Length: 302
Image (cartoon, rainbow, N blue to C red; front, top):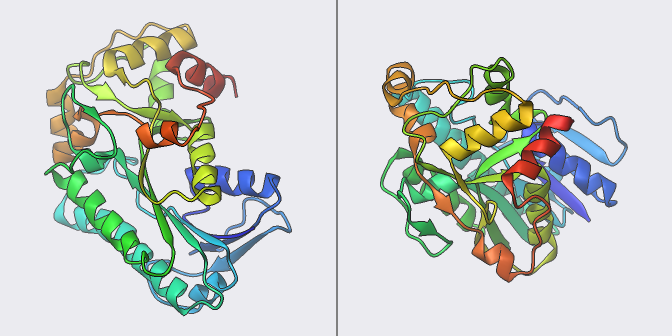
């Protein structure tokens, strides 16, 4: 299999490329810097800006599949959502997706599948409601962003199978949400944020990779929630992370402090999202890390 990727040099992308190579795939990664963190003959890095049409799109030709991961971080580094920041968050997702689809249309032969990233923010903050893939979108900024992102991917539906991963908070050893959380928790000054009662839906990086591979291999189209079957409340997340590190986890960061520091961007941390992976389970996917304690123990040990 030959796979073309955007966002391949990021936290999630590096792991996905490594997993693809380990199972014998050839990867072509578009990158603005042409940085190559793999040094592997089966990975070719093409210089280009995925948010702009350009010669890089010709590298899509001959790929069996496209994995679209491009997008600026939502709250890492922690930026307030100014109008310019909101525009960046939007265009860094929609423009690369439109350009990928444009490249797929021009390719000969064309890839047969597009796996495009989205996020659980699609659903908006919904309290204790259990959310599967049939739940409607929310009405806040992040929900609208995800809707636009997914609509851009679905413009490829007439030429390829399109599968969309609505990812939860990704737990991994070298990036993602834990990169910000681990330092204060290791110092014993970590703890819950906001009320602590909000639901946090998470996924271990190994299972996110597993779901990407599932969507590449199986005839599955549409949205798939990339979250553990066992989401937890923030209070529980902080307690388990503290216990994993052998540190206290009692220092609560109040909502008002987050609001002062981040403004509207605090919504990403304070939202309550109880997202369940019904379609993954229905497809027979077995999670390697369904429970938080085992997931954090694995990540922290690396």
